Length: 79
Image 1 (cartoon, rainbow, N blue to C red):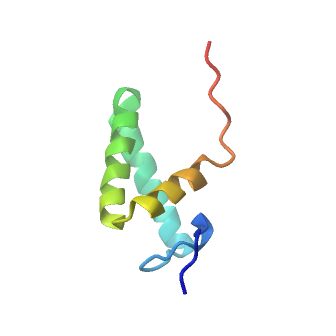
Image 2 (cartoon, rainbow, N blue to C red):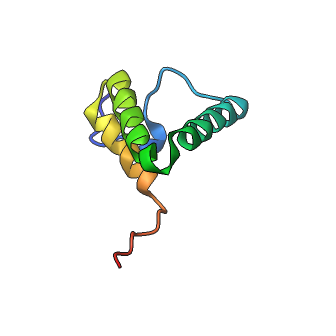
């Protein structure tokens, strides 16, 4: 059965991570962001996102993940 729209919360994935694995991923990501430093942290995150998108293999699913990650973020205020 095909759905017209897949919610980011119900995306099909090869597996799920338990809490301990998510904590390990978070710690590794935080360490890598800190190591990149403020001058290169955005570049690091873009490179990571592009590598993840390539591994995911679906522009639509990646778009849904971007939308899910944007939820609840405060809008950027231009000064």
